[in-house]
Image 1 (cartoon, rainbow, N blue to C red):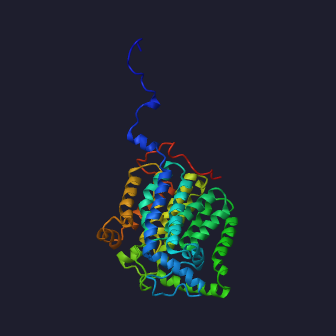
Image 2 (image 1 turned 90 degrees about the vertical axis):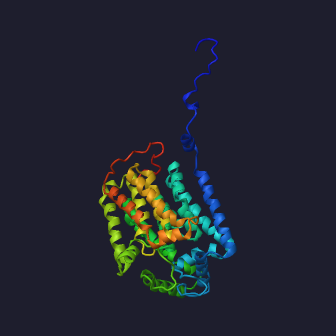
Image 3 (image 1 turned 180 degrees about the horizontal axis):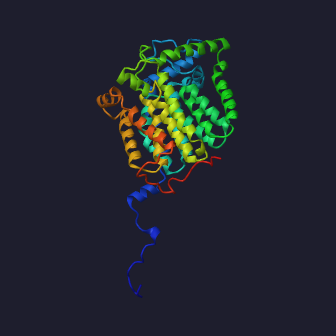
Length: 415
């Protein structure tokens, strides 16, 4: 620069003005999203508790009281709009939320669901990919929380079980799966992930013992005779719950594939036939890819496939259940290379699945599009088929590899 010139020196590269996109990407959105999840708990739970406006929570709460009073958990009670469908062990596990005053219990319960899910996602992806997943699933999580459903909790437990397996903590994985199974039976499927890790027989023994211990929890509050009677009633109840329209007053289900077949094609055979086919289709790529079990990307993709599988082949999947599937699809989207297929499937899933979750959508649209035409399963099934193909080695055309900084592996080494 000539002496005496008044021109300003050229800014260093790191001092040049950045675009709005760069500034947005530079923000660490994780604490803001966790705060949003926490705030949503207060916004939803407190009004529900004050107005006694939560049917699901009252059923859970009633289960605790019926167990303590020696009443049959699975009888129909006039005070509740639906049946109690969970294990006797869940009635014990729910006691810290069902026994305090209603508002306190609701805040604690909804807070556990929302914040444990956020924590699990950020442990799986402790970078901006985790923030992206939390943003993508927020609306569906919010919808599940409006119904005080346990689906966000189940999602978190499956992810935490996977992370425990990654870190060779078999007891932690067994406990997470056992607790999920006590809440809803289908998280038992997460035990299949253990096939990808060493010492499978040892895990099987640990898991069996842990599951028995969790299911023995009612012995802490009632006699062995009453515990046996409650489990006998549950075993008798489950087949009735599996058959469509067999329980008068039972809530509406948007389906999984078994319900889709019934709704569209009049399929009336037991749903476990379709579910059995689904299990086989899920396991084929998992077992066929044995040579890739050392690959952390393969294992994470198997987790995503599992989360979607647990919903689309569930004969009693409800609208709030789809937070589980959407979480799997969102994780799949951020950990795999972009392609027109993944973008299309994500947009389609968000458009249809989240439509039914949002209370801001007029009831006529939400029920007409999502409930009547039963569309929620469709994009999730398409995404799951793409995941299964990728587990079998299919490479998507037009895929764009994400930048390494954003998509570096966040898991411990697999072997």
